[in-house]
Image 1 (spheres, rainbow, N blue to C red):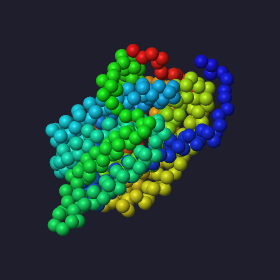
Image 2: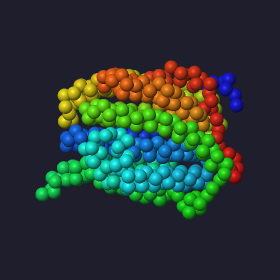
Image 3: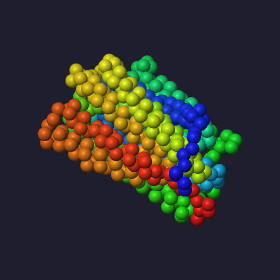
Image 4: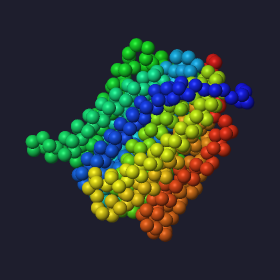
Length: 458
Protein backbone atom coordinates (compact mmCIF):
# COMPACT_ATOMS: atom_id res chain seq x y z
CA UNK A 1 0.00 0.00 0.00
CA UNK A 2 1.64 3.22 -1.18
CA UNK A 3 0.97 6.23 1.02
CA UNK A 4 3.67 8.47 -0.39
CA UNK A 5 1.89 9.91 -3.40
CA UNK A 6 -1.05 12.21 -2.79
CA UNK A 7 -4.03 12.56 -5.10
CA UNK A 8 -6.24 15.53 -5.83
CA UNK A 9 -9.88 15.05 -4.98
CA UNK A 10 -12.79 16.72 -6.68
CA UNK A 11 -14.17 19.00 -3.96
CA UNK A 12 -17.57 19.19 -5.62
CA UNK A 13 -17.74 15.39 -5.75
CA UNK A 14 -16.66 15.16 -2.10
CA UNK A 15 -19.20 17.64 -0.79
CA UNK A 16 -21.98 16.35 -3.05
CA UNK A 17 -21.55 12.83 -1.63
CA UNK A 18 -21.10 14.13 1.91
CA UNK A 19 -24.21 16.28 1.80
CA UNK A 20 -26.25 13.45 0.24
CA UNK A 21 -25.39 11.37 3.32
CA UNK A 22 -24.81 13.89 6.11
CA UNK A 23 -27.90 16.01 5.56
CA UNK A 24 -30.42 13.12 5.66
CA UNK A 25 -28.57 11.40 8.52
CA UNK A 26 -28.20 14.69 10.39
CA UNK A 27 -31.89 15.44 9.86
CA UNK A 28 -32.75 11.97 11.09
CA UNK A 29 -30.64 12.51 14.21
CA UNK A 30 -32.25 15.92 14.68
CA UNK A 31 -35.73 14.48 14.41
CA UNK A 32 -34.86 11.74 16.91
CA UNK A 33 -33.43 14.37 19.25
CA UNK A 34 -36.56 16.48 18.80
CA UNK A 35 -38.65 13.53 19.96
CA UNK A 36 -36.65 13.56 23.19
CA UNK A 37 -36.89 17.34 23.34
CA UNK A 38 -40.67 17.39 22.91
CA UNK A 39 -41.04 14.69 25.55
CA UNK A 40 -38.88 16.74 27.92
CA UNK A 41 -40.81 19.91 27.07
CA UNK A 42 -44.23 18.33 27.64
CA UNK A 43 -43.16 16.59 30.82
CA UNK A 44 -41.45 19.80 31.92
CA UNK A 45 -44.80 21.57 31.59
CA UNK A 46 -46.34 18.84 33.75
CA UNK A 47 -44.02 18.76 36.79
CA UNK A 48 -40.29 19.07 37.44
CA UNK A 49 -40.36 15.58 39.01
CA UNK A 50 -41.73 14.09 35.79
CA UNK A 51 -38.97 15.42 33.54
CA UNK A 52 -36.30 14.41 36.09
CA UNK A 53 -37.68 10.88 36.60
CA UNK A 54 -38.12 10.12 32.90
CA UNK A 55 -34.64 11.49 32.14
CA UNK A 56 -33.15 9.09 34.71
CA UNK A 57 -35.31 6.19 33.51
CA UNK A 58 -34.17 6.73 29.93
CA UNK A 59 -30.62 5.99 31.01
CA UNK A 60 -31.62 2.33 30.67
CA UNK A 61 -32.41 2.58 26.95
CA UNK A 62 -29.31 4.77 26.61
CA UNK A 63 -27.15 1.94 27.98
CA UNK A 64 -28.97 -0.59 25.80
CA UNK A 65 -28.17 1.57 22.77
CA UNK A 66 -24.48 1.47 23.70
CA UNK A 67 -24.47 -2.31 23.21
CA UNK A 68 -26.73 -2.17 20.15
CA UNK A 69 -24.71 0.73 18.74
CA UNK A 70 -21.47 -1.25 18.95
CA UNK A 71 -23.14 -4.13 17.07
CA UNK A 72 -24.70 -1.88 14.42
CA UNK A 73 -21.58 0.29 14.15
CA UNK A 74 -19.14 -2.59 13.69
CA UNK A 75 -21.55 -4.30 11.31
CA UNK A 76 -21.83 -1.02 9.43
CA UNK A 77 -18.04 -0.87 8.96
CA UNK A 78 -18.04 -4.29 7.28
CA UNK A 79 -21.23 -3.55 5.36
CA UNK A 80 -19.73 -0.35 3.87
CA UNK A 81 -16.57 -2.12 2.73
CA UNK A 82 -18.39 -5.12 1.22
CA UNK A 83 -20.84 -2.75 -0.42
CA UNK A 84 -17.90 -0.86 -1.94
CA UNK A 85 -16.50 -4.20 -3.10
CA UNK A 86 -19.85 -5.04 -4.74
CA UNK A 87 -20.54 -8.24 -2.77
CA UNK A 88 -24.31 -7.97 -2.24
CA UNK A 89 -24.67 -11.52 -0.90
CA UNK A 90 -22.26 -10.79 1.92
CA UNK A 91 -24.08 -7.51 2.61
CA UNK A 92 -27.34 -9.43 3.10
CA UNK A 93 -25.67 -12.01 5.33
CA UNK A 94 -24.03 -9.34 7.48
CA UNK A 95 -27.35 -7.52 7.73
CA UNK A 96 -29.02 -10.66 9.06
CA UNK A 97 -26.16 -11.25 11.49
CA UNK A 98 -26.38 -7.82 13.12
CA UNK A 99 -30.18 -8.12 13.36
CA UNK A 100 -29.77 -11.28 15.45
CA UNK A 101 -27.21 -9.66 17.73
CA UNK A 102 -29.22 -6.46 18.14
CA UNK A 103 -32.44 -8.33 18.95
CA UNK A 104 -30.68 -10.46 21.57
CA UNK A 105 -29.47 -7.32 23.33
CA UNK A 106 -32.96 -5.80 23.18
CA UNK A 107 -34.53 -8.84 24.83
CA UNK A 108 -32.17 -8.58 27.82
CA UNK A 109 -32.98 -4.92 28.50
CA UNK A 110 -36.70 -5.44 27.86
CA UNK A 111 -36.70 -8.10 30.59
CA UNK A 112 -34.83 -5.90 33.09
CA UNK A 113 -37.06 -2.86 32.52
CA UNK A 114 -40.25 -4.90 32.75
CA UNK A 115 -39.48 -6.92 35.89
CA UNK A 116 -37.03 -4.92 38.05
CA UNK A 117 -37.55 -1.21 37.20
CA UNK A 118 -37.34 -0.12 40.87
CA UNK A 119 -33.87 -1.64 41.14
CA UNK A 120 -32.77 0.15 37.98
CA UNK A 121 -34.14 3.52 39.14
CA UNK A 122 -32.55 3.20 42.60
CA UNK A 123 -29.13 3.16 40.90
CA UNK A 124 -29.62 6.76 39.79
CA UNK A 125 -31.58 8.35 42.62
CA UNK A 126 -32.69 7.83 46.20
CA UNK A 127 -35.70 10.14 45.80
CA UNK A 128 -38.82 7.99 46.39
CA UNK A 129 -41.02 10.15 44.15
CA UNK A 130 -38.60 9.92 41.22
CA UNK A 131 -38.24 6.14 41.69
CA UNK A 132 -42.01 5.68 41.65
CA UNK A 133 -42.57 7.77 38.51
CA UNK A 134 -39.53 6.32 36.72
CA UNK A 135 -40.38 2.69 37.55
CA UNK A 136 -43.90 3.02 36.19
CA UNK A 137 -42.49 4.66 33.04
CA UNK A 138 -39.95 1.85 32.52
CA UNK A 139 -42.61 -0.88 32.69
CA UNK A 140 -44.70 0.99 30.13
CA UNK A 141 -41.85 1.77 27.72
CA UNK A 142 -40.14 -1.65 27.88
CA UNK A 143 -41.83 -3.15 24.75
CA UNK A 144 -40.31 -0.39 22.60
CA UNK A 145 -36.84 -1.78 23.38
CA UNK A 146 -37.65 -4.84 21.23
CA UNK A 147 -38.03 -2.67 18.13
CA UNK A 148 -35.26 -0.06 18.44
CA UNK A 149 -32.19 -2.21 17.72
CA UNK A 150 -33.68 -3.89 14.65
CA UNK A 151 -34.77 -0.55 13.23
CA UNK A 152 -31.21 0.77 13.53
CA UNK A 153 -29.96 -2.21 11.51
CA UNK A 154 -32.39 -1.35 8.72
CA UNK A 155 -31.27 2.29 8.80
CA UNK A 156 -27.64 1.31 8.15
CA UNK A 157 -28.53 -0.68 5.05
CA UNK A 158 -30.91 1.99 3.74
CA UNK A 159 -28.08 4.56 3.94
CA UNK A 160 -25.74 2.25 2.00
CA UNK A 161 -28.41 1.80 -0.66
CA UNK A 162 -28.59 5.56 -1.15
CA UNK A 163 -31.98 5.75 0.56
CA UNK A 164 -30.93 7.91 3.50
CA UNK A 165 -33.82 10.24 2.77
CA UNK A 166 -36.23 7.41 3.63
CA UNK A 167 -34.88 7.35 7.18
CA UNK A 168 -35.76 11.05 7.36
CA UNK A 169 -39.33 10.35 6.28
CA UNK A 170 -39.62 7.66 8.95
CA UNK A 171 -38.24 10.03 11.57
CA UNK A 172 -40.68 12.76 10.52
CA UNK A 173 -43.51 10.25 10.97
CA UNK A 174 -42.25 9.25 14.43
CA UNK A 175 -41.82 12.88 15.52
CA UNK A 176 -45.27 14.05 14.42
CA UNK A 177 -46.98 10.93 15.75
CA UNK A 178 -45.10 11.13 19.05
CA UNK A 179 -46.03 14.79 19.57
CA UNK A 180 -49.73 14.20 18.80
CA UNK A 181 -49.93 11.11 21.00
CA UNK A 182 -48.02 12.85 23.82
CA UNK A 183 -50.52 15.71 23.89
CA UNK A 184 -53.41 13.32 24.50
CA UNK A 185 -51.70 10.54 26.46
CA UNK A 186 -49.79 12.83 28.86
CA UNK A 187 -52.42 15.53 29.42
CA UNK A 188 -55.67 13.89 28.36
CA UNK A 189 -57.67 16.75 26.78
CA UNK A 190 -60.50 14.39 25.72
CA UNK A 191 -63.67 14.65 27.81
CA UNK A 192 -63.08 13.38 31.34
CA UNK A 193 -59.86 11.57 30.38
CA UNK A 194 -57.03 13.15 32.43
CA UNK A 195 -54.12 11.44 30.72
CA UNK A 196 -51.45 9.05 31.97
CA UNK A 197 -48.83 11.64 32.94
CA UNK A 198 -45.27 10.37 32.43
CA UNK A 199 -46.57 6.92 31.42
CA UNK A 200 -48.35 8.55 28.47
CA UNK A 201 -44.95 9.45 27.03
CA UNK A 202 -43.95 5.78 27.32
CA UNK A 203 -47.05 4.53 25.51
CA UNK A 204 -46.47 6.94 22.62
CA UNK A 205 -42.84 5.78 22.40
CA UNK A 206 -43.91 2.14 22.07
CA UNK A 207 -46.34 3.01 19.27
CA UNK A 208 -43.93 5.13 17.22
CA UNK A 209 -41.03 2.65 17.53
CA UNK A 210 -43.27 -0.17 16.32
CA UNK A 211 -44.47 2.04 13.47
CA UNK A 212 -40.87 2.87 12.46
CA UNK A 213 -39.92 -0.82 12.35
CA UNK A 214 -42.97 -1.74 10.25
CA UNK A 215 -42.12 1.06 7.80
CA UNK A 216 -38.52 -0.22 7.52
CA UNK A 217 -39.73 -3.75 6.79
CA UNK A 218 -42.09 -2.47 4.08
CA UNK A 219 -39.24 -0.43 2.51
CA UNK A 220 -36.95 -3.47 2.49
CA UNK A 221 -39.43 -5.41 0.33
CA UNK A 222 -39.25 -2.91 -2.50
CA UNK A 223 -37.32 -3.76 -5.66
CA UNK A 224 -33.51 -4.07 -5.38
CA UNK A 225 -33.56 -3.57 -1.59
CA UNK A 226 -31.55 -5.70 0.83
CA UNK A 227 -33.79 -7.63 3.21
CA UNK A 228 -33.36 -10.53 5.63
CA UNK A 229 -34.35 -14.05 4.64
CA UNK A 230 -34.15 -17.52 6.16
CA UNK A 231 -30.88 -18.34 4.37
CA UNK A 232 -29.27 -15.16 5.67
CA UNK A 233 -30.60 -15.59 9.21
CA UNK A 234 -29.15 -19.12 9.39
CA UNK A 235 -25.85 -18.15 7.70
CA UNK A 236 -22.64 -18.33 9.73
CA UNK A 237 -19.00 -17.66 8.87
CA UNK A 238 -16.29 -18.16 11.45
CA UNK A 239 -13.84 -15.80 9.74
CA UNK A 240 -16.40 -13.03 9.23
CA UNK A 241 -17.58 -13.39 12.82
CA UNK A 242 -13.97 -12.99 13.95
CA UNK A 243 -13.66 -9.79 11.90
CA UNK A 244 -16.95 -8.56 13.32
CA UNK A 245 -15.93 -9.27 16.93
CA UNK A 246 -12.46 -7.76 16.36
CA UNK A 247 -14.12 -4.47 15.38
CA UNK A 248 -17.07 -4.74 17.75
CA UNK A 249 -15.13 -5.32 20.98
CA UNK A 250 -13.13 -2.06 20.93
CA UNK A 251 -16.22 -0.20 19.72
CA UNK A 252 -18.22 -1.74 22.57
CA UNK A 253 -15.43 -0.90 24.99
CA UNK A 254 -15.42 2.67 23.76
CA UNK A 255 -19.23 2.91 23.84
CA UNK A 256 -19.42 1.49 27.35
CA UNK A 257 -16.57 3.61 28.65
CA UNK A 258 -18.16 6.75 27.21
CA UNK A 259 -21.80 5.78 27.74
CA UNK A 260 -21.49 4.47 31.28
CA UNK A 261 -19.44 7.55 32.03
CA UNK A 262 -22.23 9.67 30.58
CA UNK A 263 -24.72 7.66 32.61
CA UNK A 264 -22.61 8.44 35.66
CA UNK A 265 -23.40 12.08 34.93
CA UNK A 266 -27.03 11.29 35.74
CA UNK A 267 -25.93 9.40 38.85
CA UNK A 268 -23.91 12.39 40.08
CA UNK A 269 -26.53 15.00 39.21
CA UNK A 270 -29.29 12.78 40.60
CA UNK A 271 -27.58 12.83 43.99
CA UNK A 272 -27.05 16.60 43.90
CA UNK A 273 -30.76 17.37 43.97
CA UNK A 274 -33.77 17.81 41.74
CA UNK A 275 -32.67 21.25 40.50
CA UNK A 276 -29.32 19.90 39.28
CA UNK A 277 -31.00 16.84 37.70
CA UNK A 278 -33.59 18.90 35.81
CA UNK A 279 -31.00 21.43 34.52
CA UNK A 280 -28.56 18.72 33.43
CA UNK A 281 -31.37 16.77 31.74
CA UNK A 282 -32.45 19.76 29.66
CA UNK A 283 -28.82 20.61 28.83
CA UNK A 284 -28.35 17.06 27.56
CA UNK A 285 -31.36 17.44 25.26
CA UNK A 286 -29.97 20.75 23.93
CA UNK A 287 -26.61 19.08 23.23
CA UNK A 288 -28.34 16.25 21.39
CA UNK A 289 -30.15 18.70 19.13
CA UNK A 290 -27.09 20.87 18.42
CA UNK A 291 -24.71 17.97 17.68
CA UNK A 292 -26.98 16.29 15.12
CA UNK A 293 -24.93 17.84 12.31
CA UNK A 294 -21.61 16.39 13.47
CA UNK A 295 -23.21 12.97 13.97
CA UNK A 296 -24.54 13.08 10.42
CA UNK A 297 -21.11 14.06 9.07
CA UNK A 298 -19.48 11.32 11.17
CA UNK A 299 -21.82 8.66 9.75
CA UNK A 300 -21.25 10.02 6.24
CA UNK A 301 -17.48 9.94 6.77
CA UNK A 302 -17.62 6.30 7.82
CA UNK A 303 -19.58 5.29 4.72
CA UNK A 304 -17.53 7.39 2.28
CA UNK A 305 -14.11 6.32 3.59
CA UNK A 306 -15.24 2.71 4.09
CA UNK A 307 -16.39 2.36 0.46
CA UNK A 308 -13.04 3.68 -0.81
CA UNK A 309 -11.06 1.30 1.41
CA UNK A 310 -13.18 -1.64 0.24
CA UNK A 311 -12.07 -0.75 -3.33
CA UNK A 312 -8.39 -0.39 -2.27
CA UNK A 313 -8.46 3.34 -3.11
CA UNK A 314 -6.14 4.19 -0.22
CA UNK A 315 -4.79 7.50 -1.48
CA UNK A 316 -8.24 8.90 -2.14
CA UNK A 317 -9.38 7.70 1.30
CA UNK A 318 -6.38 9.49 2.80
CA UNK A 319 -7.30 12.75 1.07
CA UNK A 320 -10.90 12.35 2.22
CA UNK A 321 -9.58 11.99 5.77
CA UNK A 322 -7.74 15.31 5.46
CA UNK A 323 -10.89 16.99 4.20
CA UNK A 324 -12.94 15.56 7.08
CA UNK A 325 -10.46 16.96 9.58
CA UNK A 326 -11.06 20.49 8.28
CA UNK A 327 -14.82 19.93 8.18
CA UNK A 328 -14.78 18.76 11.81
CA UNK A 329 -13.14 21.97 13.06
CA UNK A 330 -15.60 24.22 11.21
CA UNK A 331 -18.52 22.13 12.47
CA UNK A 332 -17.26 22.40 16.06
CA UNK A 333 -17.10 26.19 15.84
CA UNK A 334 -20.66 26.37 14.50
CA UNK A 335 -21.95 24.07 17.24
CA UNK A 336 -20.24 26.12 19.93
CA UNK A 337 -21.77 29.35 18.65
CA UNK A 338 -25.29 27.89 18.43
CA UNK A 339 -25.26 26.50 21.95
CA UNK A 340 -24.01 29.74 23.47
CA UNK A 341 -26.76 31.68 21.67
CA UNK A 342 -29.35 29.16 22.85
CA UNK A 343 -28.42 29.43 26.55
CA UNK A 344 -30.38 32.57 27.55
CA UNK A 345 -33.47 31.54 25.58
CA UNK A 346 -34.11 27.92 26.53
CA UNK A 347 -35.08 28.55 30.18
CA UNK A 348 -38.31 30.25 29.12
CA UNK A 349 -39.74 26.98 27.80
CA UNK A 350 -39.66 25.00 31.06
CA UNK A 351 -41.33 25.18 34.45
CA UNK A 352 -38.21 25.32 36.68
CA UNK A 353 -37.22 26.75 40.02
CA UNK A 354 -34.99 29.84 39.97
CA UNK A 355 -32.03 27.74 41.11
CA UNK A 356 -32.58 25.24 38.30
CA UNK A 357 -32.81 28.08 35.76
CA UNK A 358 -29.46 29.50 36.93
CA UNK A 359 -27.87 26.06 36.72
CA UNK A 360 -29.29 25.56 33.22
CA UNK A 361 -27.88 28.81 31.79
CA UNK A 362 -24.39 28.15 33.16
CA UNK A 363 -24.41 24.51 32.02
CA UNK A 364 -25.41 25.53 28.49
CA UNK A 365 -22.69 28.18 28.29
CA UNK A 366 -19.98 25.70 29.32
CA UNK A 367 -21.45 23.15 26.90
CA UNK A 368 -20.41 25.46 24.06
CA UNK A 369 -16.78 24.49 24.70
CA UNK A 370 -17.77 20.87 25.26
CA UNK A 371 -19.57 20.51 21.90
CA UNK A 372 -16.63 22.09 20.02
CA UNK A 373 -14.35 19.28 21.20
CA UNK A 374 -17.12 16.69 20.89
CA UNK A 375 -17.74 17.58 17.24
CA UNK A 376 -14.11 17.04 16.21
CA UNK A 377 -13.79 13.84 18.22
CA UNK A 378 -17.04 12.44 16.83
CA UNK A 379 -16.28 13.06 13.15
CA UNK A 380 -12.70 11.77 13.26
CA UNK A 381 -12.72 9.12 15.99
CA UNK A 382 -16.23 7.74 15.38
CA UNK A 383 -16.37 8.29 11.61
CA UNK A 384 -12.99 8.20 9.86
CA UNK A 385 -11.05 5.86 12.19
CA UNK A 386 -13.55 2.95 12.41
CA UNK A 387 -14.09 2.99 8.62
CA UNK A 388 -10.74 1.19 8.35
CA UNK A 389 -11.08 -0.86 11.52
CA UNK A 390 -9.19 1.48 13.87
CA UNK A 391 -11.55 1.40 16.86
CA UNK A 392 -8.91 0.87 19.55
CA UNK A 393 -7.98 4.52 19.92
CA UNK A 394 -11.52 5.54 20.80
CA UNK A 395 -11.77 2.92 23.56
CA UNK A 396 -8.42 3.88 25.09
CA UNK A 397 -8.95 7.64 24.89
CA UNK A 398 -12.44 7.44 26.40
CA UNK A 399 -11.24 5.24 29.25
CA UNK A 400 -8.35 7.57 30.10
CA UNK A 401 -10.24 10.85 29.67
CA UNK A 402 -13.47 9.79 31.38
CA UNK A 403 -12.63 7.13 33.94
CA UNK A 404 -9.11 8.19 34.84
CA UNK A 405 -9.67 11.96 34.77
CA UNK A 406 -13.11 13.58 34.50
CA UNK A 407 -15.26 11.18 36.53
CA UNK A 408 -12.89 10.78 39.50
CA UNK A 409 -12.59 14.58 39.76
CA UNK A 410 -16.38 14.98 39.55
CA UNK A 411 -17.07 12.24 42.11
CA UNK A 412 -14.57 13.67 44.60
CA UNK A 413 -15.86 17.17 43.92
CA UNK A 414 -19.47 16.16 44.50
CA UNK A 415 -19.25 13.74 47.42
CA UNK A 416 -15.96 14.53 49.21
CA UNK A 417 -15.23 18.23 48.72
CA UNK A 418 -18.90 19.27 48.28
CA UNK A 419 -18.06 21.67 45.44
CA UNK A 420 -20.78 23.83 43.85
CA UNK A 421 -23.01 22.07 41.32
CA UNK A 422 -21.63 24.03 38.35
CA UNK A 423 -18.02 23.23 39.26
CA UNK A 424 -18.90 19.54 39.49
CA UNK A 425 -20.65 19.75 36.11
CA UNK A 426 -17.58 21.34 34.46
CA UNK A 427 -15.29 18.67 35.89
CA UNK A 428 -17.72 15.96 34.79
CA UNK A 429 -17.86 17.20 31.18
CA UNK A 430 -14.14 17.86 30.71
CA UNK A 431 -13.45 14.46 29.10
CA UNK A 432 -14.08 15.51 25.48
CA UNK A 433 -11.83 18.55 25.94
CA UNK A 434 -9.01 16.46 27.44
CA UNK A 435 -9.08 14.02 24.52
CA UNK A 436 -8.66 16.67 21.84
CA UNK A 437 -4.90 17.52 22.07
CA UNK A 438 -3.90 13.90 21.38
CA UNK A 439 -6.16 13.29 18.40
CA UNK A 440 -4.13 14.74 15.52
CA UNK A 441 -1.08 12.63 16.33
CA UNK A 442 -3.14 9.45 16.08
CA UNK A 443 -4.76 10.61 12.86
CA UNK A 444 -1.34 11.20 11.21
CA UNK A 445 -0.27 7.59 11.90
CA UNK A 446 -2.87 6.44 9.31
CA UNK A 447 -3.71 3.23 11.15
CA UNK A 448 -7.24 3.65 9.78
CA UNK A 449 -6.20 2.91 6.16
CA UNK A 450 -7.16 -0.78 5.96
CA UNK A 451 -9.24 -2.97 3.65
CA UNK A 452 -11.15 -5.40 5.87
CA UNK A 453 -12.91 -7.44 3.17
CA UNK A 454 -12.15 -11.12 2.47
CA UNK A 455 -12.12 -12.85 -0.89
CA UNK A 456 -13.49 -16.20 0.33
CA UNK A 457 -14.93 -16.04 3.87
CA UNK A 458 -15.15 -19.36 5.74
